[in-house]
Image (cartoon, rainbow, N blue to C red; front, side, top):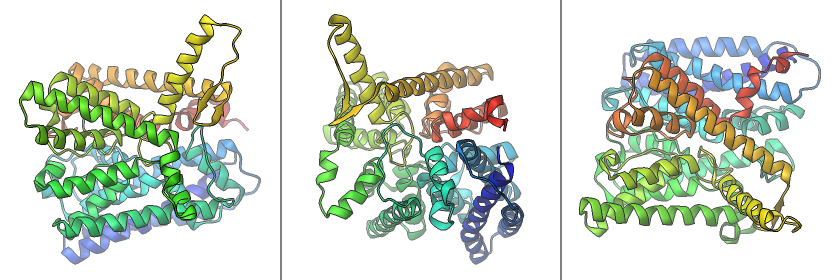
Length: 479
C-alpha cells in the first residue's frame, strides 16, 4: 500500500471541499449571519490539512488498493471536515448529528436530523445542497476533471463508480470526467431557471436544483416540495428527477449523435420507465380505492412519490406515511430497485434487477433442459457468468448489510417499521423512511449508535459496498 500517495490524493480532495465551502461562506458574510465564524474556521482547517497532505512526495505506481483506499477514506474525510460548519455554528447539537447530516449529503441520501429546516441560516442550507451536488456526480470524478491523476485516474474512477456494465464515453478519463460534469452542470442551470420562472424564489430554486439533479433530496422547506402547493413546480421536479435517474453516458451519446435515439434504444432505460409506470398505476389505484381520492389527485401524488423514491431523491409532496399498506409496500420495493446505472441515484439499480430476473429465468430453463446452452443478455449484450456471479454477490451483500443495519436500529429501541425503513433508506441513499422517520419527521430522535450505523450504510450504498468493505480486510493493508 502506497500510503503517501493515498494521503496526497486525499489532500487534493480536501482542497476541493475547502473551495466548495467558500460559497456558503460568502453567503454568510452577505447575510451577516452568526455562522460566518463557523465557515471561516472550517475553510481554514480544511484548506490547511489539504495543502499539507498534498505536499507529501510519493513514488511508485498506484494500484487497485490505493484507489479503494482513496475513495473510501476520501469520502470519510470529506464528511468529517464538511460537518464542521454545522457543529461550530450550533445548527446541530452534537458532532454525531453533524456527521450524519453531511454523510447524508455527500452520499445523496437526504435523511436529516434538523427538525426545523426553515429556521436554519441560508448558508447552512446552501452547504447541505452543495454536499449533495458534489456527491451526486462524485467528489472523485470532480477531482479527475480538475487534477491530472494519470494512471491513478482509472483506478479511482472504477473504485468510486463501480459497476458490472460500464461504457467509456471518451478515451481520456480526465476529459470524460469533465464532460460528465459539464452535462451535470448544464442540467442544474436549466432547472434553476425553470423553477425560478415557475415562481420558486431564486435561492430556493438553487437549493432544490442542486439537490434534485444529484437525486439527493435536501429541501429548504420543512415539508419539502409540498410546501409550494404548485402542480407546475411538482411537474418540473418530477421531470428532472426522472431525467437524472437515467444513465449520464446516454446524455453524452445524445449530444454526440444529435439524436434522442440512444435514449429510446437503451434496454435499461426501457425497464426503468416500465417500472415507474407500473408503480404509478398500482399506487394510484390503491389511493383511489382505500382513501377515496379523486383520480387526478391520486395520480398527482403517485407520480411524484414514485419518481422521488425510485430515483432515491426522497422529496415528498404529501405525507405518504398515511398511505394504505399496498402503496407504502410499493415504495419500499422501489427503495431497493433504484434507477439506472451511471445515474446519480443509489440502491441496487435497474440493470442489476433485470439481469437477476433473466438469470433466475435461465436457471429454471436449465433445470428443465440441462443440455441447452443458454446466455444471459441485457439488450444485445451478452453478460458473462463471471459478471453474473459478481451481481449475485453484490445482491447478497446488499441484503445482509440491510438486515444487519435494521437489527442495529431495532437494538436501540426503535419499532420494526422504523428500523426496516431506516436501513432500507440508508443503504439505498433514499432519504425519508416510514413511521417515526417519515416525510413529516426526521432522524434526530434516533440513538447515536443507530446514526453511526446508518452512516456506514449510506457510505456502503453510495460506493456500492465492495469499495468500502475492502478496507476491513487485513490483507488489503499488507504490502
